[in-house]
Amino acid sequence: MSRLNYTFQAFQKDHFWLPVAVMGLFMLITLLMTGDRQYSVVRAFLGFTLPLLAGGLSAYTFLEDSALELQFATKRPAWKMIAERLGLVLFVIVFVSLTFQLFIQLLGVSLSPLGNVFQRQLVWFVPCLTTLVLGGAVSLMARNSNGGMAAVGGLWIIQILLRGWFAREPVWRNVLLFYGVMDPLGQPRILNQITLTVFSLLLLVAAHTLLKKQERYI
Amino acid sequence: MIEIKNLHKTYGSGPKAVTALKGIDLSIEQGMYGLLGPNGAGKTTLMRILAGIVHASAGSVWVNGNDMKTDQGRRQVKAQLGYLPQELGLYPDLTARQFVDYMAILKGVDDPQLRKKRVQAVLEMVSLLDVADRKIKGYSGGMKRRVGIAQALVNNPRILIVDEPTAGLDPEERIRFRNLLVELAAKRFVLLSTHIVGDIGQTCRNMTVLSKGEVRYQGNPAELTQLAKDHVWTITSPDGAKPNAGLTIVSMQHMPEGVNYRVVGADVGRYPQAVQEQPSLEDGYVWLMK
Image (cartoon, rainbow over all chains, first blue to last red; front, side, top):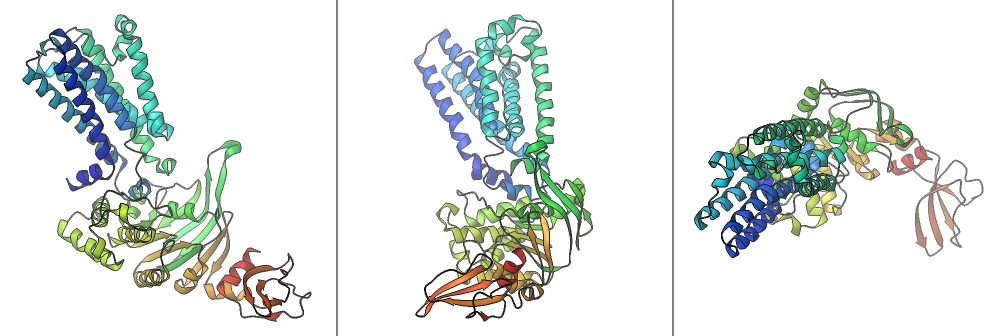
């Protein structure tokens, strides 16, 4: 526990405030809206904004570590470092999402269009997991945090702009980050969520292989 | 025992490839061992290979019976390693105590009581106890260096690798740290890499000089000093004119009678006023690198 606490304090404290600030902004916008518009804001935050935040934060979680060489000189295996760093970002994202959903419940906005409690968590969690691992893996691949951010941002923008086309294509919709939130109760969302999860696991293996090559990063 | 055989390291590939080490052979016994050389000699690469961070391109490295080619070997070495890199990065928002404690956790000192004792002891060793609960961002360069030294010692390492450890320390701290290293070397491998010739001369029983990725000298500091025997001179120049290009000026001093140049070179025939001097380790190093 002290290790995670130190890891968080050492270089991920700032990571906490950005999603909290964005959540605050969306809470404010929700308060200012009425009726169906409130639901649209909720959908925009959970399904579209959170994945971008998750990917953006994870892109900066490995290489922006001022004591990276000291960390590499310890016997800790690469998988532990990955679990710790990505786990902390995921923890922040989960915290923000659940806090936001609680706020929405208190406001009396119904989230039932997103499915039952479990289904509505998958709507944001699966794409967040994908962008989270993508941001981390690409930053390691490019040996540059901005590279990871560019990959996440680029994918996000392309999919936002072409989401209609992606959603209509039976194959391509499986890799659409936002398919779950666009069609939360449709059957194809299940294959989409499975595909994104498999994609995340493959990226996780890639990130692990890359992080083991420590000399690339010092 | 550290055994290095025909070690090569090349970064990158193709026309952009940079060869950092070219066929290094070294055998290092327990105690204090010095690594000396100019910038770009390959010292840091060698240190990083011994620390298990960088992989060798060819050749073999065995540290305390562990093959550094294997993951298992590197992990075993890291478990008994204290490492102070040349470019030391710290976490400015942590206090020195928190930082050293964090590093102790990462190094596997899991028992909280033992860890607390070790953190306290190493902070005392580097004289940071009175400021240990202040954030690192408020520390001077020398204090940050001492935090680096403390973290290297916190797991009571069997192998201590220190790259330019005295950079940024004031003379008193430098002497104290040198003495500390010598004390630690009684039961450990201590590898000291530095540009400061004096640090090696004062502390190391054996040493290696690296240049352009190759071993230029292996032996003890006294023998290196003797390489410059009969080649060190003082030349006084009344008008301040520098001795010619064949001689390397080691130091100069303005005196009432002119400028005194301490030079290293084979031929001082053009300077009948030249006075032969006893060589120092620095002279030996300069003579070797000429």
